[in-house]
Length: 316
Image 1 (cartoon, rainbow, N blue to C red):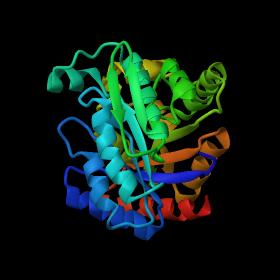
Image 2 (cartoon, rainbow, N blue to C red; image 1 turned 60 degrees about the vertical axis):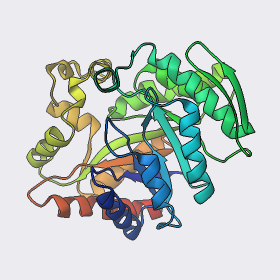
Image 3 (cartoon, rainbow, N blue to C red; image 1 turned 180 degrees about the vertical axis):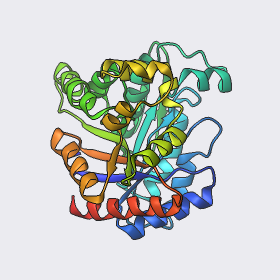
């Protein structure tokens, strides 16, 4: 992951709109798009299988596919399709998701998520790198063969210190989400390096998944964040992360202005460009952007941010 790359999340509840968003990203010059599979929403792996046939030069990535509802061999079945249709153009991001969703929707016993995730990563990396796996762990058993190795990195979501360390020791990259920039610098990156050193392996990259809004009016930016990202300060894992990063007000179940200023990249094109460059200088290997639109014209706001991301994608 030595290439500094900017990607953009293109999620929507409508598959046709996702295809349109990928097209908008491609025309703007963005070279990497990502999808999240959440709850009973659209399956990102299925959509990317279709997208490979329309967008021949685009990189694709998942951030993330939840692990608890699917055995790792099931994901491996789907990933092989994308790998064969778009060799070298897909990166798999997986993660345990959140207790409320996993337990209420799937009836899953959401216990020891980090232990589950570590075994999941080990199974997939072994299968993808060698073409075979015979694994019996505490949480998973997997015995399978595929026609041969496939070139698909296996990355994992990370939020707290131990998950970043696990990624450093076992995954091909760590994917953050709504982590304040100071937290990425002081907690995430050192934890990834520490995990890699313990495992005696090269340090994998940090994919900094960051909300971005090219807009000058802070009041309208605040409204956009509160509307589009309202759920995260209500989730215990995120509240604990924010508190560790110096924002204990996250336990009030809402975004404070301080949290927005420390987490969201916003401002003019010049200000946003500078902040993105600072993330790369800090040590992020990729920046994955979720666009936050603001103001009365949401589409115009979205396109303004996308156009800047396209320009920066070509720059980096």
